[in-house]
Each structure stands twice: as structure tokens, then as C-alpha cells.
Length: 175
Image 1 (cartoon, rainbow, N blue to C red):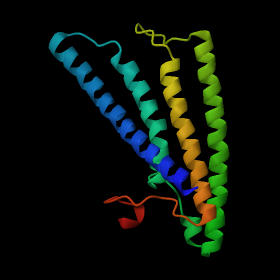
Image 2: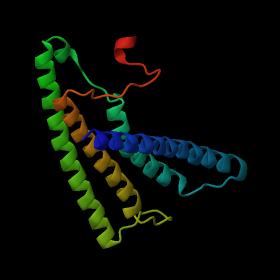
Image 3: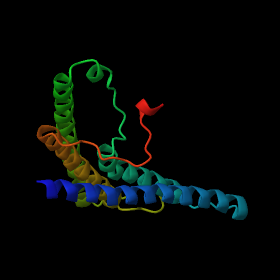
Image 4: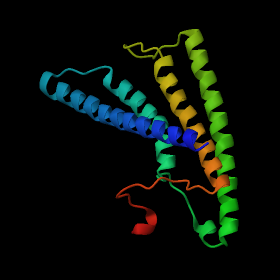
């Protein structure tokens, strides 16, 4: 079990880096658009569309890394004011709810992606991008997020730490 959890963490780390590259890609696209307009009075017709695709991909593919590293926003007012055993039960309940939600979202989005593939849907822009490409990347991110939610539940139930130690990270309690 430990090896699977470690593999899951390594995959989340790699995909987290890829998500960061997509965010950098957004900056490159937007700056290229601004430069092309300012210098050549020409618009890169694909830049805004691809920036939106990149943002969605970065968001969903980065979700598993963010969950494992403890970066998701969480309100711990209730759990910090109850005994540790009750706080653990609240965390387990919230994680089970998270697993149910991510399983549903993943299933629904995979169905959506399959329908786009079957119908040959393309974007309504001049680039006519096959929508299955960004949707498949988002589906992949959702699958990884669901697996990370399940891994979080396993860690909770087996007494392992649910968040990895992040060197130099800043949490709400640090300020």
C-alpha cells in the first residue's frame, strides 16, 4: 500500500510541474498577443482560446498536487475547537464527501469528453480545435484528483500524514 501511495505522490508532483508549465504557457500566450498587437497590429486568434484551455488544464491537473501539499483552502474553525478524535472524524467525513464528489465529477467529465470525441466537436473559433484534446487533459487531471482524494482517505484511516511537508511553504497559521 505504501508503494502505491508513494507512486501516487510522485505522479502528483510530476503533473504539478506540468500544471506550472501550463500556467507559464498562459503568460507566454498573453504576452505574445500583447506584443503582436502592439508591434505588428496583428492579433493571434488562438491565444485567448488556448489560454482558457491551459487554465482549465492547469487547474484540474494541479488539484492532486495541491491536495497532497495542503494547498487547498480549508476552514478548520470547527475541527480546531473539538477533541482530536472528533476532529479526525470530521476530517474523515469531509474526505469521504470529497471522494464522492470527485468520483461523480470525474465520471461526468469523462462521459462529456467521450461525447465530444464521438461527435467530433470542435471549438467555435477559427482554430477549430478538437475539444476532445483539452477535455481529455482535464479528465486526466480529475482522475488524478480522485485518486489523491482516495489516497487521502486511506492515509487518514491508517494514521499516515495526509499532507506532505512543503519546504518553505506558508500556511494560514504561520501569519
